[in-house]
Length: 215
Image (cartoon, helix red, strand yellow):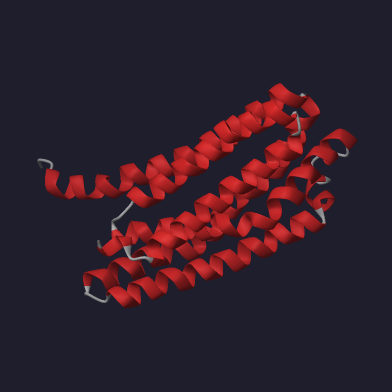
């Protein structure tokens, strides 16, 4: 049987752009790890890498909420129920925010409970704890942004998620590298990663709430 290009193009319009979103996340983590390695050495990398691994583990949690949102948002938009689709997206985003924020707060309050599962090296624990205390309380914005990325898949509108991901990438890596060179402080670098999460989550929320799917 020959390929039918029209439905294939429709699939790739969403699927290919979705792959870029995953690539952005991995570039941020890999780039930040390289920056920490250059600035502070092996123990700091171990602490940061273990701490940021918790962010990776948030992805399947958000996916559990986001995957149904793809179908629900797409179905309602297809049925002409735009307001209902938007309500579903914002409700799912709120739930994702609450869950990931709770995980981040617990990690910030008790960082050694997570880090100690992998090593007891004091320098590793210190760096990982600093990361979780500074960035962990803002994990909710990662959950907010990523859940709305799933909802945007259902709407077939992925330019805003890509733009928000690119903004996070620039703030985290270019901004973080600049801040680290100016201050020499890993804490300041971690604060820049926090700013990147805020930019990502709030940009996605503001865009979806403003109705960019329907413009």
